[in-house]
Amino acid sequence: MPTDAQKIAFVAARQAEAQDALSRLTKRYGAIDPADADVVVALGGDGFMLESLHGALGNGTPIYGMNRGTVGFLMNTYDEDALPDRIARAQTVGLNPLRMTATDIHGERTSALAINEVSLLRESRMAAKISISVDGVERLNEMICDGVLVATPAGSTAYNLSAHGPIIPIGAGVLALTPISVFRPRRWRGALLPRKAAIAFTVRQADLRPVSATADFTEVRDVKRVEVSQDPNHRLELLFDPEHNLEERILKEQFQP
Image (tube, rainbow, N blue to C red; front, side, top):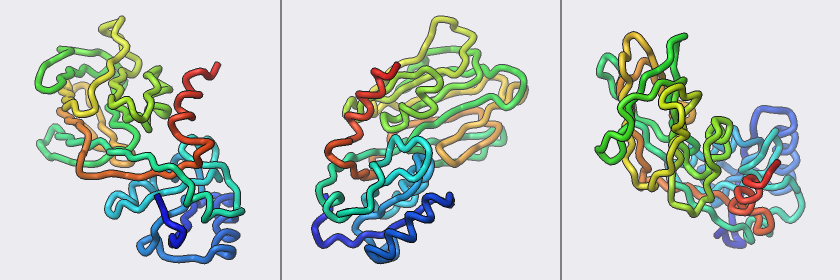
C-alpha cells in the first residue's frame, strides 16, 4: 500500500474529458514522470487502464484508476479532492497476466502478455476448427466455432462475458476457457481451469481456415498453434477504494439483470 510520502504521476487517455482532468489534477498536485512515481493515476476508461497496466509490466508501479471514460469497471470514482489520502487508504489487488506463445503457419513464434484475455478468432468466412489440450491432455479433438478465448478473472467481465463466459472472482484461482459461437460440439459451453493450467490450441486446416490469435493488443495472423499459461514472473498491482473494491464489483456484476 502506498505511503503518505507517495510520489504521484498522472497519465490520461486522449479523450477531452480525460485530458481536462489531467490538466486540473497536475495543476493541483504537481506533475512528475511516471518512471519516478510511487503510484500512477490513470485517467480514462477500462481500455486506457489496460494500456497503463501494460506500461507498468516492466516496473510494477501500482496503478490507481479514476473513471474519465465509458465503462470504468476497473476504475475508481472520479474525485479531485483528498487524492493522496484516497490512495493511501486504497486496497491492493494483485494480478498475474497470461503469456501467449503463438506459432504461425510459417513456423514463426510470437510471445506476448495479456491482462484480460487471449483470444483466437477465425479470419475468413469459414468456421475455425480447433483442438484443445490442457496440461498435455487433449480435451477436445475438434471444435467448430468462430473462436475461443482464455480469460483472467480481471478480464472475465470483458470479452469473456460478451461471449457468455462466467464472471470469476479475483481470488478464485481459476481461468475461463470460453468458446465463441461454437457449432460443434453443440452442448459445450466452456470450462473453468486452474490458474496454473497450461492450455494449447491447435488449428486444424490452418491454411484453409485461417485463425488469428490476440493477447490484449498483440495480434498474430494465420496461427497453427497457440500456447497459453499464467506468467508468474510478472505481477501487477491495482489500487481500489475500500468502499468500491474490485471483488465487490465482480460480485455485483453477477447479479445484474
